[in-house]
Image 1 (cartoon, rainbow, N blue to C red):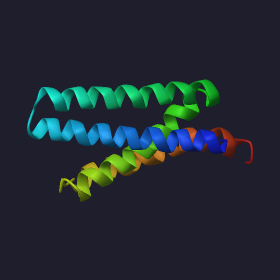
Image 2: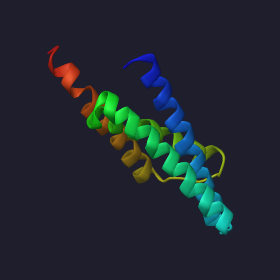
Image 3: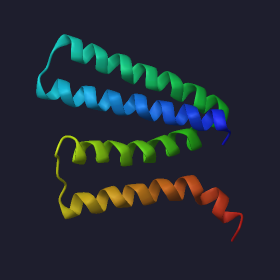
Image 4: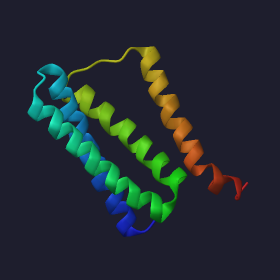
Amino acid sequence: MSFSGLLQLVFSTVIFLLAATAAKQWGLAPSLGKILLTLALYSLGNLIMLRLIREFGMSVSFSLSAVIQLVSVNVVALVFFGERVNALQATGIMLAIAAVALITLGPYLQGRL
């Protein structure tokens, strides 16, 4: 992945984190402004993802974005919003991270085995 691709991935992750935070805020106290902000942020994040798909392909772009968002959204939910997950949910999150890692790294690792 090129440096510009990495920057786009980081930027889209930040945008999606802001969108998820806005969605949580809307869930706590719904308002038209919050839902419009949430929709605008998700739209911007998806426009950036379209550039990544064009440059790196759908499987790599969405896989990397999915695992990065999975980890970062959970960190925000746990640290900033005080949400909790039980042991079964935590196991599911870890398995999801492992699954996306295998999907993303699988083609590269297969060639080396």
